[in-house]
Image (tube, rainbow, N blue to C red):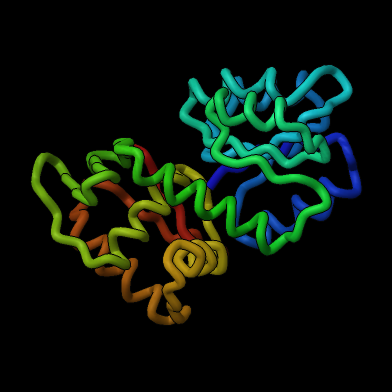
Length: 218
């Protein structure tokens, strides 16, 4: 999934970028509002982690642009002020985490926000495949597909990262993070093969030799 981090403290940002990438996220890092807006205009994000106090304004100035693009927002800030907390939630933020923070708790809050996002009734597409995330239903070329829970989760991962190369490790991490499901590396190959067969060309999952897989949206 695509994550935008907006944080002006370079030391905190470096640690967070490392952690988020290790968790399988594709991270864009901005240290101010201007560079964050540039990222938002060029790319769609699943989630944004925002500081409140930034060199050229506040994180609140980014919320409207992010929410209009369907991005979930979490504030991560040292500003422990009731007025700002209320403003964040009224503006549509999913959560408000106060520094200093525990990394494990932050990741748990991020995953909870993404689970809520998946269940908001949004519809995802991948080639000729349509996914109704709120009902867990999949249609390929107009016909309903019967997928196992793991095949469905794999399809969601590819639909959320279409046209991006995912390593096997990233896919395994995303599967583990979603519901605590443990999948062995060899088992992943089998499930991707089964998913390809059920999609029957409606969406193409390409093997990128020596790297992983890419699902193409065409």
